[in-house]
Length: 109
Length: 110
Image (tube, rainbow over all chains, first blue to last red):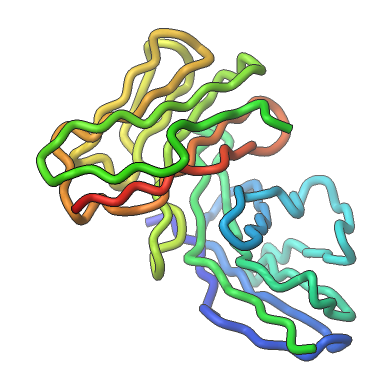
């Protein structure tokens, strides 16, 4: 089965410390990978796409095909980063977006 | 941006009742999706649609029915609601870059 794995359900980090949210995927081809963020009881918002190679809100994510990983990183955590983060993968042939189970990030003041 | 809207935002229904959740998008995107969000499971795909009158099952389709007679609407119907269908339901659309999600419908089946 095609899977997206986020091994950490909960992650707590002190304000100002670096953040890394892990994501691994299983797929032999070239998937599209995304990070979505969900603030309390709000809709999911696109944070990053691996194709765009952007840095949004200080977050970056690099696709590592050898390790099949797409970890999300930020050098200095801020309190407003507290949210639920989902890694997701799409296969271009059918456009279906498959999500990981999510990581709840809490930034400790 | 309110290009994709879901209604209702909250719904409480009784076991066995039929419930329809609405999803409307203003962009004429080809692809639309329904997900359910549950603790420990993340978001799981229920059904998706590649275009009007084309729908297909996702990961957890049992107990749900969809239709897409118009490109902009993609309603999700629970034919006979069960407590296990208590969840938050998100509709999404895609064309080109990225997926856009609605605000969600929080459904409680009692």
